Length: 232
Ligand code: TIU
Image 1 (tube, protein in one colour):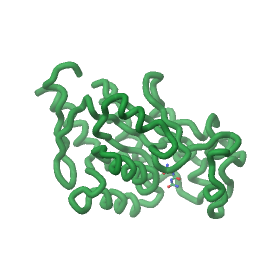
Image 2 (cartoon, rainbow, N blue to C red):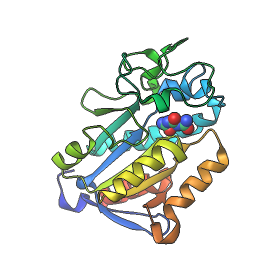
Image 3 (spheres, rainbow, N blue to C red):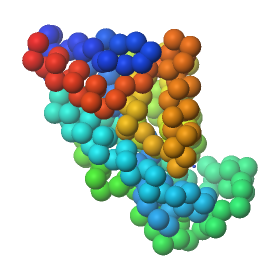
């Protein structure tokens, strides 16, 4: 992405199209971890049907591949905690009545603990060594992480956001980012929820009121914008 005519892209989005500079844009992939996506992890211990999330994988793969092709900054996040749980508030660990709690041993290692198999990103979307991985103890990618420093270091102004789940970690991250001045474009089919109705409403909340937290666009619209700006 060295030619200035390659830099600008216009994404067909809701509530309105958005023009952005790709060199100031990062792809942020939220928590595509085995603990949420696969049986035996944190998501299933909470009583969820994890198969609901699989639909987001292919759209994310397509956008990730295109982002890699144009040299866009790619950031992956992982929700999880230190082995001694020192960064896990009791209010989070004790919540609800899961079959296994955070830190308990499960079939993919200790639930939601850094370094365990379940905590890692699914093979289909595995980060390249050159990509950034942010470990976060909360739902949002900014709380208690180096996210702000990294975005400032790379001069990022716009975030293409996808991952799971739509109404929890994606929404929390978008709200945090919006308050910090970032334009967030949420990739609709690159997000998923254990509750399809929450996915739909989660996207509506972002784009309502003239885009109160950001924009929503399909993966196809993002790919088209990347393709068009490369050939103009
Ligand atoms: N439970 C649920 O829907 N989500 C989370 O706990 N974390 C994320 O969304 N990543």
